[in-house]
Length: 52
Image (cartoon, rainbow, N blue to C red; front, top):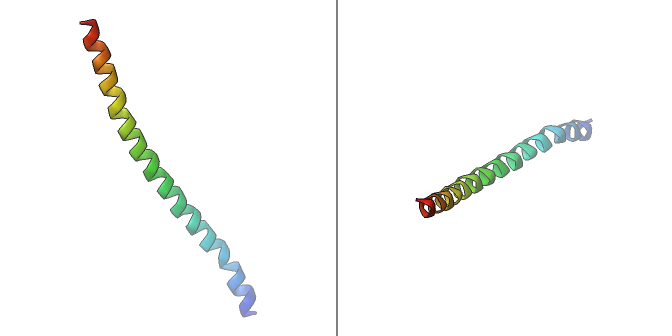
């Protein structure tokens, strides 16, 4: 009886783990977007400056 109760709680634990993994991925994606966004903006500025 106790073993079956422990097994059913694993689903909640798995969902929490997936949530933490998803949050970590979201942070990494956010950092990459901010970093690349700044680099791309600098490139566009350099290209626009060469036309002027």
